[in-house]
Length: 57
Image 1 (cartoon, rainbow, N blue to C red):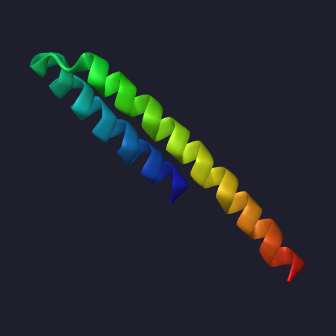
Image 2: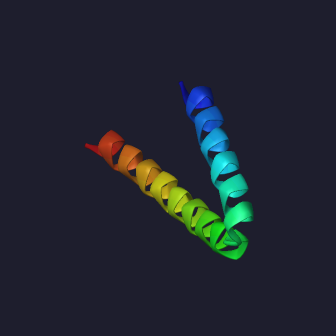
């Protein structure tokens, strides 16, 4: 299931990238991409911490 979500996210980002190119919002697209990457990394780190805490209890 994880592979499907990765493919889905890639498809959505591609469509948004094409739309941003035609609307002239390429810089905004890249800035939002960086924000999404950072939030995903934070989410994954918090998820690992939660799993470790669950194993302790």
